[in-house]
Image (tube, rainbow, N blue to C red; front, side, top):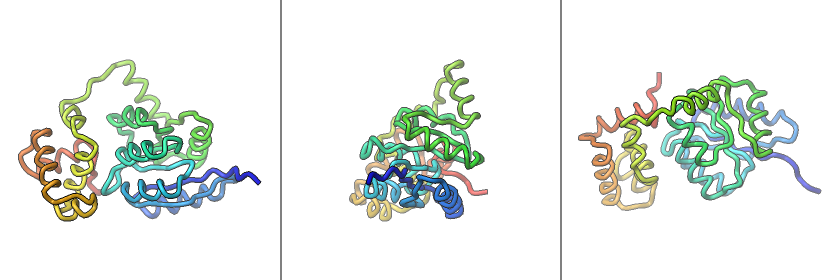
Length: 221
């Protein structure tokens, strides 16, 4: 007997969001939530193991943000569909996420029906967007906006440098980063020096401010 259920993985650092999504999706015929993660690094590891059909991915997650997690998952599992769920319509990241292969971008104020439609669309090979996100994409094509100088600098970082950049901004020590990434402390320090040079920063305080401005880390209200 062929199992036609759509398997879904939830990646969000807020437990209440994951619980709400799980309850919504488990109530939909043909949907099955098979795993959860509260940070991007955990999401990549578990998705590689579980191989779900669809991943609902938050952008602002600790240790590895949703953009870099999407990049890694699509490299490991190109056929897995990824739908972004975010509190904000991050204009600067929407184009990058779709270039990485994301199948949808929804704001967290979307209805349950919108989320279900997005999953069905992804499974059919289509793209689903929140109306406000669609408007941003249209405006981007019409106005052909250029990246800000700050965004241009950030785009020069390698994937590994972006991982380390985020963890430094989150306040993780050199030792913690080396243990998480399984690299030496001296390698972490070398990456940190290159990051500071590429972003033209003088100290960690400036790095944290930079991370907040480009939306890699958020200030809790």
